[in-house]
Amino acid sequence: MSVVTKKPGDDTVSAEIGRRTDEWSQCLRAIAKHRDRGAFARFFKQFAPLIKAFALSGSTLSANHADELVQEVMLKVWQKADGFNPDKASASTWVYTIARNCRTDLYRRLQKFDTPLSAEDVSLDQEGEEPAAMLHQRRTRERVRQMMGSLPADQAHILAKVYMEGKSHSEVASELDLPLGTVKSRVRLAIQKLQIHMEEL
Amino acid sequence: MVKFHPDMHMLTEFTAGTLPLAQSACVSIHLTFCSKCRELSEAQTAVAATLFEELEPAPVSDSQLDIVMSRLDETAPLAYPRENRSQTCSTPAILQRLMAGDYSDLSWKKITSNLRISYLSTGDPYYEFALYHIKAGGVIPEHNHRGSEMTLVLEGGFSDSNGTYLAGDFLFREAGDVHAPTALADEDCICLAVLDAPLSFTRLKHKWMNPFLQLRAS
Ligand SMILES: [Zn+2]
Image (cartoon, rainbow over all chains, first blue to last red; front, side):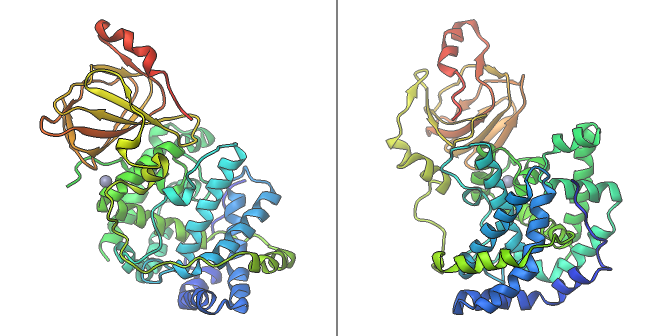
């Protein structure tokens, strides 16, 4: 199964998320401060379908595992909402990192890894105070999205495989029947373009 | 000031969560030393989150919401202390977790008069994850790699024919590279090494050591 990404810019859902970023941040705040179940249900309706799509885009998870992942991620949202810091990340970036970590852990569990380290232990901290680079993140996301829309299709396609399908560069190379060097250079070009763009902001 | 970093591809795979566990633990420790790589990884996370927002939503049935709502009570909220996280202890948190103590509490295996190794268990079956302790001024016999080797300097430093590496510096060597690192003269050096195949010492004189360097992944 491959990732279906919608054309950035011209679709209502992602524009909606952009416009209502603050709504989702406030939702998380209400969950953290007041254990607000109504806010949680709204948050679920918005993000659970994206989490499920993310789970399924990895192609190796069954529908049951995808549902399991949705539950696990949403329970973490309930549990960790107090750690969400809107100065550091948008609500959707925060949820994405939880989903990514849970998916990685699920893969490892399925491969019978017995490890004292969770993906969260190893990943970059999205919480706490540290106001570093993410400060600009919310303001720039519209422009990141525009920039992604302007990437050549082959580069955008590979970024989706790397980040959403969770494939290593060599897995992408063998799947698309491309030399590893070609995959690497497309990733490099895309990231450089996006990075230069982000640094300008 | 950190001078040697993982390349963009390694950082991309780290950020995407696809780097093997032992290697990603090593990259993660590098990030505790390196704000430059941290910022790059954060920028990539923003890119990934944008892709995430643009996924075609997959239908989730209402019964899923009911199941999750019914489980909220069994899930206690985590409280996050709002304090400065810059720790009092200089040992990276991941290593503290794996060592259950400090470097001095580990059991070290003596390889040469200058080199001691302590193997840590990450649970990654494909990679060996070990701390190397090289005495000040000590030389590690020239060796080459049958697989890749990731090295991160934790304390002190060492040099080889390509340069001098200090705390936080990250090196990645492909199979077949030959090198003979020497610890700096004034301080013992502690490094983290992540290997996907055993080292082999090239000089005949040191051949006897190879059995000690069987790959110890766990
Ligand atoms: Zn770095």
